[in-house]
Length: 147
View 1: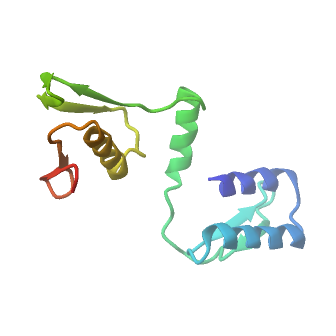
View 2: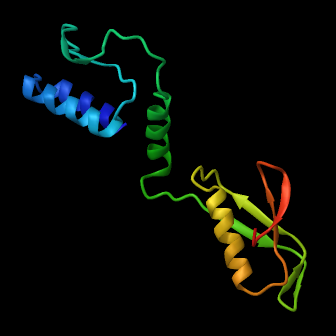
View 3: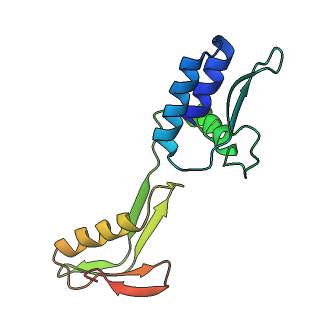
């Protein structure tokens, strides 16, 4: 995304020289490595090619719609917005054992994943409860938190 915005910013303001092209080639190589990349930056005034790397090579487009989604999210939610995941329980806790359920309420945090669940299970286990089980969403099996 930053690379895309970089191209847009500079294509509007500056004429690319060979120095800029070499710099962009280096940046693409550093950031994207051996990924298939096809870039073509053109003048909005006359369509002249300002910078091109495999510009005529047809490849499947990346998730460019994410740029629009991210822009809309920043506009609506603001740059300081943070997603939250909440944990709730029902039932009673007796002798450090929950006789009930743990509910996880997420708010669309796409970064919350398996490692977070494992950390949660480790924290619960460290509280010296008798047994904590959780559902592994991939295999649909219940595992002890120590597994």
